[in-house]
Length: 266
Image 1 (cartoon, rainbow, N blue to C red):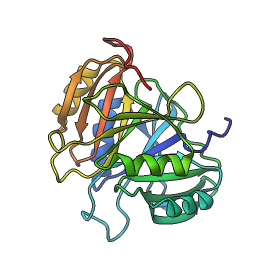
Image 2: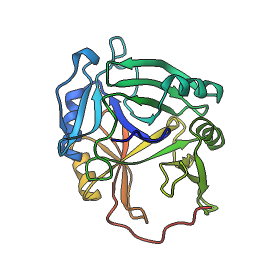
Image 3: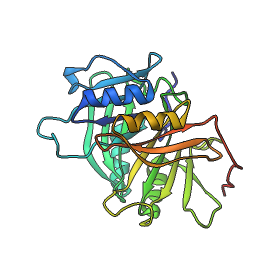
Image 4: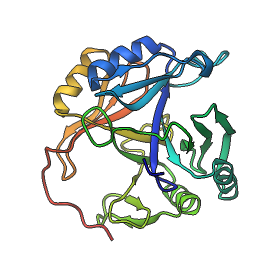
């Protein structure tokens, strides 16, 4: 597989205190199966859909148990993670975990933008990232939900060189980012106090594709998840936001079921 351009979403994973519970939940909701955990790398366990790698789950590192909220982390591709880490620092971000090699799989760092959005950077080695995208049970989209959109926008364009377009809607502050092509690679939504309680930090919402949004939500709720928003129709698909039993937020979307006109982007 050709290397993805710098700034392309390339991988996602999440840390769970109850990894077996997470495997049961996502296995039922998204149809994932799981590989063997890698004890050499903190029992990191990859998830698969139709035999292709789509995500991973991992238990907390020693001493971290119960100290942090479970959350999905999005990784952006980089040809040189050390150079990207320096751009993160010079653009006002914070490198939370300095660049490190993960065997021959690749190299990574974890960082935070000036608005507090956590993310990762991945320089591929033998692990190139998503093996399946846009199909049911796999990653299809991500949106930066931020309370300080100007800070996040400036940071993302500075670090990854994105072009931006804004939705022509006076009631919504929404942008998309692209890398020079027709297709956007990332969305950005302003969080408002009316929609998001003060205790909800800025974050990245991962969207996983599903065959049927309503059925996926029903399965999630039966397994102890909570419906945060939706299901609702849109020009992009029928989607809903869910919080899993361990507090990790994500979204599901049926991209085949669309309604309405595509919004104007300027």
